[in-house]
Image (tube, rainbow, N blue to C red):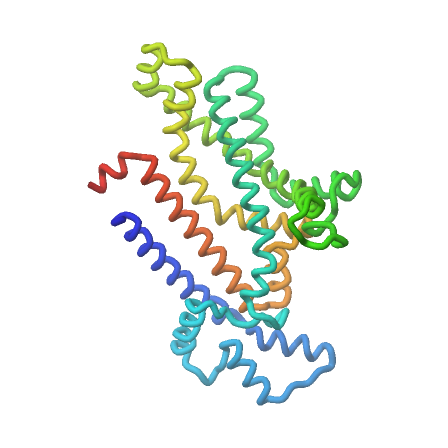
Length: 329
């Protein structure tokens, strides 16, 4: 409990630091969402009174009559209470707009983490055990080559080949628009079908993790307890999985936590290219419209997810590695 509370305190302070940066960064940039909104309105021939402009500035927290420090205090209070402002692009609460895309992004990223880390971990264990063989050469070289391809190139290549040209997969959406959402076989099958191509693309880009697991496993195979297991006549499968892999997987948990931010960044590109209706699409539209409240909300969600993943990784390491508990005692 002492360890958990200390880590919670640390990540809470980190989240407050992220809130601070999230507040001041857009305000130090040229322009503001109100000016962007007025520019779009002027292009359509609309006009707005000075009083209405002042009301909009107060609504979005950009009033020049309020001291910056007071704006910051109000902003922090609103964030902690779940009031993240109003989008200037969709004219709806930020949390409501983000909530529509959050489910699909979590589905895509969650599926990726489950499939990718299972595949790369098992492949890393296998090729480390079979190091020096043809299987080791093919898997290691292939994983390095595939993971070195830029995400944009990989996504565009798969999109034009399998979706646009061959027509094997849909060119957009998270499910067939003609279907009604519900927990039935037809709808779930449509969701899975639309998820396949973006998921395969992300898994291919994450194949570089095979090399990390392979390296960890090879280091473990040289330890004395592995040699002792063989000397005692323990079966190879048990030595590989319970002796070697159990210890080799610990650094991969840390790698997973540190890569969460990059995974969400990569999913943004994937969602835009495959027209997948997740947070990436929302962020793309927010950037085009300079919708600062929505951008700030997106960054806060990403920060919370990264900090949450690191906290879970810390707890798992504490549970799985008895040496950490010994150091704490």
